[in-house]
Image 1 (cartoon, rainbow, N blue to C red):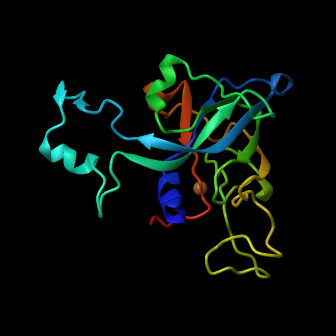
Image 2 (image 1 turned 90 degrees about the vertical axis):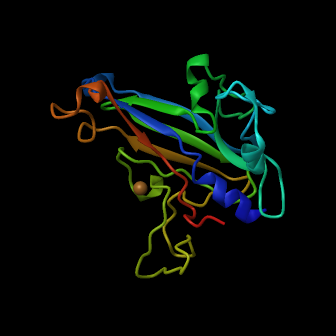
Length: 214
Ligand SMILES: [Cu+2]
């Protein structure tokens, strides 16, 4: 089961959206987010037996990938996904608007404006160690969510070991961690940014516990 989960998490990123409005520091806000890694059985073909692209039932060739077999996972598979909750009790999912349904298996979109700090309270409800590694924001090592080696701690797998500073890359099953990510002006849209993207910049976050698929 372990390898199953590891493979799936690589595509379960969150989207970070950074708005370039340039708010003065006095208006900077702390934006709180509550995100858990939850295990779900993901259905790759929720419209089964109909193929929504063709408007008819899946044919023989597509069905090869929808049926489970010795070398096929089939259309349903165990995944760990990032899901947003309403508060620190992690008891109520934040309902996704119809406009956000396209996100599918992706995690929530986290939004911030220049000067804001995103405070992400994370809980790991899955059975593997998981963290969140952001891009496009500023943080110190304790909020990096990714592994690195130091002179005193070298783990061949790159995982956190004793003496290695904690980064939140490996939050143990049942554990919790808080990340603080600052939104500064450097990575937000500039005058050379293509017009369709000038209002905001979107970046993916990833799980960085391991990059090894099964
Ligand atoms: Cu990175």
